[in-house]
Length: 373
Image (cartoon, rainbow, N blue to C red; front, side, top):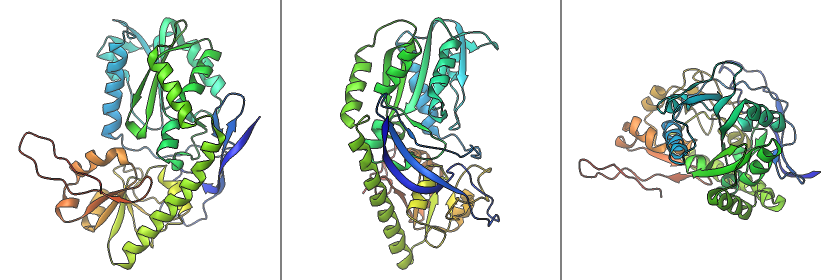
């Protein structure tokens, strides 16, 4: 039992970026979110796509957050002085094994149970949550800890991140639902952490025995208040989608009509539903740069916007650059200072285009700061 809470119509697969010279029509598929009335899990009603995303470049924000997460788990006393780990890989990249190795944890030999099982942004790509969690529970040695990290559905609601709903992400996890699902495979959630990454990333720790601490109880209450199991709250994402798409298209149209050169940065999968819902093609956005050589020379499905190398972006000396991965702002503006030095600006979305003010010079030894207008 459940109900449909979001219908984005038909969309191309968000992780399929065809070659630029491939002019064939891109197949599209229904993109709809369904909320289970029994377990409260938000999920795609159907997802017939096959994962096919070219390998991206891991953003610095992700590596920094991973270090913070491991430090938090160590401080909580959940990492033994020596032991083994199993890690479930994520299409988003990143690994915790090196960080755990610094604390005496080595990769587990094949077939053996591990003291630590890590799943960072992997579980949300698995359509069969029961089977995936049962597998992770089997991999866990007695007294071990399972670490599951995910982009919180509460963040999607609070920040109107409707374009986080996309093919290849069959489930949208919340802490109340995650705690219940872990309990169903014999694991008790004992601790939780919240990070700012992606607007709201949650890490939970689960063991075969134990009781939730105050951090778990606070997150459950906080996310329930955000509406993670409320169909009415989730239905508001449809209005957010229309508002964001209309605002971006209007802004790009005004820029073109005024003669401003606008390009994009970050050929992320989340940009695919946004560009398609807003019907933004090369006439409004001539190119989106990406550091991954595997994506360069390809195009966004459905709308045909080319993916270019960063050098090609810089040579155009754009007036504005739309950043499709806001967590990368500090990293990208440091990597490409010539954008602002030549009079250009970075633009953030979510929910509407916002121009980032130029970096204000500061005394030597301090960090440069900018503001969003």
